Structures are given as structure tokens and as C-alpha cells.
Image 1 (tube, rainbow over the protein chains, first blue to last red):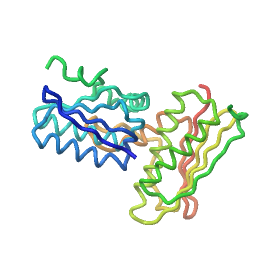
Image 2 (spheres, rainbow over the protein chains, first blue to last red):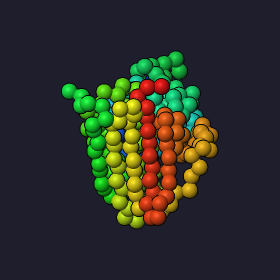
Image 3 (tube, rainbow over the protein chains, first blue to last red):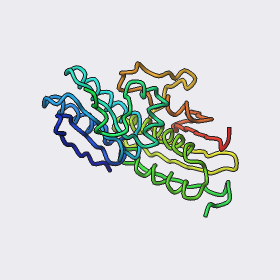
Length: 112
Length: 138
């Protein structure tokens, strides 16, 4: 089971927080949610991974889809506070070079 | 209290569908409750097992496929064995490479082959068998 919380900060950054396992059950929902956020005009997105217990390659695919959508709209997608398993999988797939990790949601868009 | 190494095994038999992944994680949670494997190896092994399970489920193409998973704690390694009666899989496990960095697919077997000490696939009659192994040391 997974739940998604989403909110928008005062700075206009969308924060999406998947809680649970981000696998082939959940990935299509995250993909759709990120697409809706960007289509709705919020192009700076942070995915807060602090409650994402587990991610698989389909979850990674949803993050990449969100990253591409945000960048195409002139924004960016960043990730914050990954759990140990998420960090491991990002490193194994070299995606830690594409999806840079931030220590907190607030820090993800600091400086711009 | 951890059981003596090599004494633990559990088996799961289920229909291969996305919701079955929860059962796979539950089986592994049961294994970790009985085995002292270090956390980083647990994470790697569970990530690989989940990718192979997802691969099996993804390739059922809507048919009703029965999947079994047996996990074993052996003195020198942890092993998982999947069997399913789905279609044969065409894969060369010696030629798995990372896809383009912005690709949205194609990383599952990369994760599995990178972290495992053993990953074998074979087709016997109507059954696909995947064997995954992770050594305790080295």
C-alpha cells in the first residue's frame, strides 16, 4: 500500500510525499500525479522520499518521467531525504547523478 | 533470537499479479527476522528479489500465472528461487547494461545483476526458474 501527500509551499514549490513502497502498483499513480502537478503550472517539484520504504525500477521510471515533464515545462524535479534502500538503488543505477539528493525539502530549491 | 544459520526456509505460492509484491516483501521480512545478514546486503538482496518478481509479473501478459518463491538462509549465502508457468523469457544475463540516463525503463535486471553473486534463469518444459544468491561475505 502507498499513499501520496501533496502540497505547495509558499515559494510555489510542489512537494509530493509517497509513503510506502514505490513499485509497479504505485508508479503509474506517481507518474500521473507528477504530470498533473506540472500540467497545472507548478514546474518546481520536490519528491520527499523520507517515507518511501522501498523503490523499484518502475518507481525510478516514474521519477524520471516527472523530471522530464518538469524540465520540459521550464522547471525541475528534485528529491529529498531518501531512505537507505532508495539511496542504494539510485547509486546502483547511477541515477544519483541525474536526481540529486537534498537533505531536506526546504533545501531542494534553495538558491533559486 | 536468530536461528542457526542454514536452518531457515520459507515458500510462497501465489498468482503473479502486481499485488503479489506485498507477499514477496512479507516473506523477506520473515527471513530477516530469522537471519543476521547485515542491513546493506538485505537491502541489496530484497531490491533484486523485488525486481525479478516484478519482471515475472510484468511478463504474464494478462494470463493467470502461478508464481512460487522459496527463500533459504544457507550457511554461506541467502538464496531465492522463483518458479512460474508463464511464457519463456528471452534474456541474456551476461549482456545487461544501464539504459540511457533519462530512460524510464530497463533498470530492473541491472539492479539484480549488480547486487547478486548469482543470478540464473532457465526454462524447463513449461516452467521458468530464476535462482538468486547473495553471499554472506565477499
